[in-house]
Length: 308
Image (tube, rainbow, N blue to C red; front, top):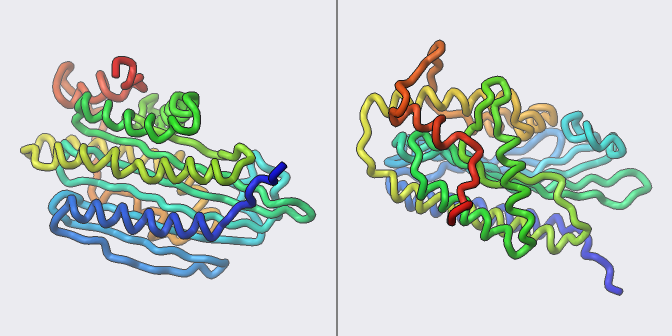
């Protein structure tokens, strides 16, 4: 009987760098005005990364697509909370993480990441897992956008088992939930972590399927909505709703916590925050308005594929 393939960190790294290149190229083509500036950096404790940022474009007000490959001798607390047996083990973490904040309020914000983690305990075999996913945060929703987003997510999961999409869709709904407001951050998508079936090749293929599908899910939505006329009312609402995005990333996001605890690069970690945002005290919206419809119809952890 053949032995399972051993974790191939070089293959994962090569894929992630290529994924970053391909996503930046596609998004720059959609924008048509601005490109991505590249900022390579190193980490004193070990490793480094390549941050790519777009700003003040025709479509994208701010966006970042970051690659990082960092390592250390002792895992940070956020990674060992439910893995105490790995405390003190040397580790490596690599991934691509992105957040795109469009200028037009009718174009949703999107977030995605795929990541790989490996630790080698003393007198033990390497322990690895994959994680990632993507989610969509509209300000003014469209049912066909939501259905398309989830159809692509489901298709990415299907070759690896029918159970994965509903499992990771539900996990995404639970994870991207602002507990202090009892409100979803957006319309969900996929979220998975600690993914290790014991077959590295299969697990790596699944991570690639998710990573490759992100741009196929997002680009058509951007193209449909980027030229929609808007005014001050829509822009004001977008800035108000961006506050929810900031709240989640600073209070709940695991990647932000891990990055800060592991001595990561602050500029890259906080790249996900929008350039402009506002908070209003106890703001209310008229029932049935476009603004109220966001929470009444879209931010409800719905099964968007029930009839698709």
